[in-house]
Image 1 (cartoon, one colour):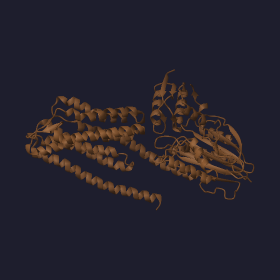
Image 2: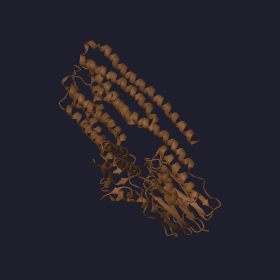
Image 3: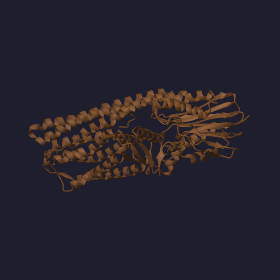
Image 4: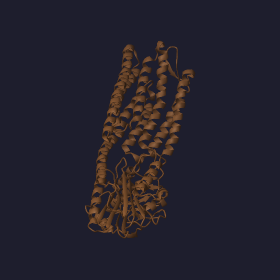
Length: 93
Length: 519
């Protein structure tokens, strides 16, 4: 299993999401199927960002791996809770 | 005059003024190229040094290329809201630099042209800081970095340019950069390297900006931008051994053509396709939402109002309300995660399926499960939808609601003021197959009000990039505790407009408000 770590930008919205989506796709294409998403820098995530994370998780699982979210701050955690994604993603401290 | 008439008229005005500009610019360009050719014939190429002739030919060829790309960008620019403004300014400055470079070689060594020589060289020197300035604005316009950083750097860049330009003017009196002697021969002075300080500074911060914001563009687009900075530099270093060969500006022009193709044309294509998609999506979205109020003229047990203000890039927000039978009212608000036509289609399916299910007697959670099953059965679709759905018993005020990842509702009980109802939500619809959706019960009393909305409200941003937020929403709503549903939505709309003044609306703003009056 190939691991990879991705550090998300400060704000994940319509302007930064395309870059992030492309980077993540590239990592999976390189064969990295166990991704750690480090969200320490992120203070805001919009629904397009959630969509990208969801798609990434699906792709990781399809490739026999998994995706883990780490270091999510309070704001991001709140968004995960409200949107119900806390039940979908594996979120670690 | 209808909206479309105004738009037609606008595009007509743009076209007419553009035609005028193209004609004037073409005349100027032909005139400048003509001057160089006439002067060249006048001095006879065989009498000139071969490096001069090479320089002048490069300058001429680049000017023609520059002119053509300028016309192309003018035509493109009107199609895409003139986002090419700074590119065009930059192009004009590089054209001017090419012209003055060509002229400088032609008048060099002619005593009677000494004044002309000084003039064209001064203008040539001034082109460098101005082109750096416009290049900076061109890349920041495309990369749009954080406003705070951008504002600070913008000021530094402007001040630097003004200083650099004043130094060029000062050179007329002090000759610290270059001088032209009595014989009309140009020569650089000892302090010439000072002139390069500003460009050097600009190279550094432009490169830094490109690297910093690299995630916003594709690799080949970034490469083209970086090439603009690095290629002239590299060529200057390579030709340093050949005295008098100056090809930096022709190289810059070549890279500008590349940049145009790579950055603007690829963006232009995307934008054109997106614009068509968006217009179609907006029509679909507007068409399917119930927008006649009062919605149920015969019913006095409740009053209801809803609104949806689409963003420029249409999302897939929707609301819905309908009578299930004489005693039950169905309410829905939802937000599809994508944009454009795909989101609209997703929305259409979700909306109709929810209504059909609920009208057939399904509870909110059953209806959500059905939509979820339908949307996930064909495998992975890269989209999801957050939905809040409820069924209210009109005679008793008892209700059942299910929340699939949607924003917290705001509620006012007994006239005590609005507050946010926070509870655990189920994940959005279409995220996972065969998923249960939690349901919860509530009871509305006479005078209670329920307000639901999408993230276009809570995540509206002001010019500083700060969110409107849930707290502010509740605060604003509490300024109008006696207001009816339509008024409540008006109050929130006004507060949002006030808060976001000057910023672009990035998401649909959708709200639904219900006042229960009882029987």
